Image (cartoon, rainbow, N blue to C red; front, side, top):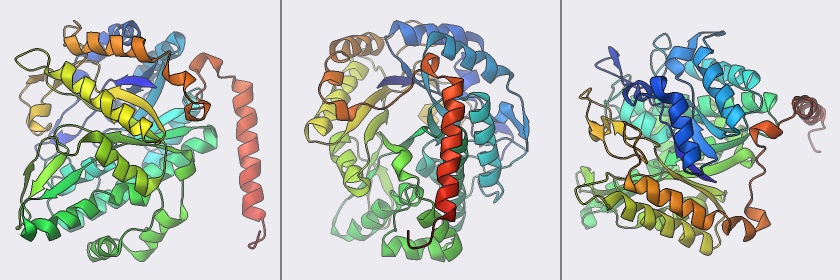
Length: 428
């Protein structure tokens, strides 16, 4: 699955007074038809995309689908396959932020409503980068609630992951063959000296918490104590153990040059640059979760020489092939995003209007060198890779192949299986 994305990040800053709406900053509300043209010009079929939650989800059971109706009808008409981001770093003002304990159930209702309105959509990322979302909002103090304690971080994390799990369950009730590609930041923390080994090990434990909870994996003992000490109850922890959705999932691993960190003895961290790289770190995640993999995000500034992003693309693709050649089932690759982004140089902390040359196209919709290189990469490899292994094909139903009658039949069968499972004897 060769993919790109149109980013719908929308966290709030300035204590909730300003929303960093990337769809607006990048001009997508105006140029969305042109953006879909660009996706097709590159030969891309899969698009990470979603409606702006803050404009769509107006209240409990209250939705404004006008923009989603227009854009998703166009995706359907073009037979483009969306991987739908339903929550990308922000929530509507009326929900507040990720400290709100009502968020998981409210979000599940939104996910169910979206799936019912667009039943032909099969691929989802309910909550994008859960680890980063909780970290930047409730530990670093950058977005949304802008808190900085371990308790606020654990509170955000448990609410975000529970929202993701409940959303998967809700979507499956509507689309039983839905597939969830959980885009998550793949991190690693390097000890700067022997005294830093302890702090680095703790950070390397925390990087797995979002996916451990999401996939129902028992956390390591030190992380269990950390969660319990900072506000997670045993009942909340057991919710994640008992709601195993792993069989419906593809593990999406994001990797940027900023994903590796050096750690000092006092716990300070700073950017390490690329040391291990995507192949090594993704192998760690695969060994832990044993799930099919997709490289769901990467990019780099075009830079003064004009070829920095192209070289990064080639390096990431070489890592994808190395993962595959080592026997791990990797199913896709994504350059993120379609166009340049705005204000990511401050991690969306500041509303400066700085254009970041990270896209396949600039904001005037002119192709960048990395866009040309990605187009060629897709042409070179798309005919070869699907012939290598039938087992690595994802059972994706293209939008125009979706039959509503078949869909309704699937729903009835799924409900029958659920009822049979519920009524089965305990020892069955």
